[in-house]
Image 1 (cartoon, rainbow, N blue to C red):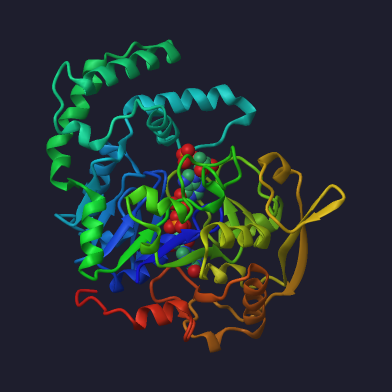
Image 2 (cartoon, rainbow, N blue to C red):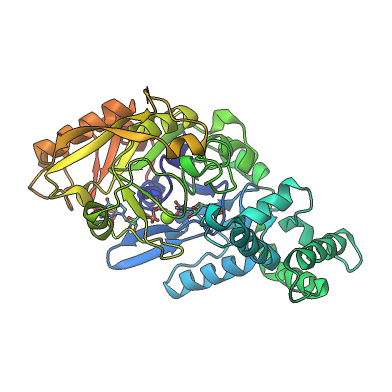
Length: 440
Ligand code: GDP
Ligand code: IMO
Ligand code: MG
């Protein structure tokens, strides 16, 4: 029984922590989309790890990690992440498999992204500046470079011509500092000797793993609202972050996906531009930001904060086929007198209960709130459901009710141990059916 961990909001829901919690019961953790725009934080005691391109499963000895064809790979960022982990005592060794069909992020992608953001002016997306968008544009434009292309690269071959054409296009677009395509070509070819040991056919390897009864965890990056098709377009990332992306991003069939767990903060955050209907602009927003330490794990940018949005959450339930929710950062709401919960949007004269498809309409939506009482006894570090204050339980009950799926797990702190597993909930049942890996 495989499991998918998917962000239900605008990213940074705490996916890294939850993936890490579940890895003792899996053999493989697979990323299927995005790139090093992701920042997944895992705290283990006093150590903190931030995973960008590598699946969070890399932190558990014995767990194998997969980077699927749907991911865009910047080899320089990958090597640097592997080195940083090495210094923190985590060895990647032979536990990594990268799809030969994954597309590469090359230096001109970052430059083109900078130009595109500048040109958009007030309409900029507020991207992570990692070259993600332009790499996916080249993929869709059928001029991308795939990891496997490096294997048989020869001067004068197909790869050389593609890079020559792409660099010429870059020079025309940027109009500054003519880049020599040969340098780009040679640099990228030079990465092959380091990459080669990890490159293979992910679809074949996953099929073998399924056939031998191994369990796979699919680790989503970003979140539903940043999905290229289903997110708040155009203020989205460029990949398929929703559960549908798992099949295309790894080369597996839909029946393999298994259980789908949605991750949601007990409130909401967003980094970059674009509408956020429940955004708090004043003091309370700052209070949430400080209490939740809401600063980007990749870029350090302050995250915009707001109240839990059940309209967006119900939408995430539908497009991902969520079985249950893991609610994180409940402790950040500690001490508030009252907690608003957005159950619908007011749009002109109408009340919307379904998430609108156009970003434009979303920015004109006003939240309709239900107000629940806060709690005075802290939930920070609480590890048993029964130890939660009554008001916190009532808030969670109502959150689940308006979202439409049960809560399977509650997180009350960044540490692995600060977690409440709901008895007989989805994760409890899933875990009890799985052997625990001896090395966890
Ligand atoms: P991800 O991108 O979804 O993996 O999330 P991030 O790592 O970008 O952001 C989540 C942040 O919240 C990280 O710093 C986590 O260590 C932290 N975190 C996760 N769960 C909790 C929680 O329940 N309470 C608190 N206070 N922090 C948490
Ligand atoms: P994790 O996996 C939060 C946002 C950027 C920007 C938009 C497009 O840590 O949840 P991009 O560089 O992808 O083209 O930027 O998407 N964004 C994220 N926000 N968490 C992330 O990842 C994000 N990855 C991209 O801030 O608004
Ligand atoms: Mg993050």
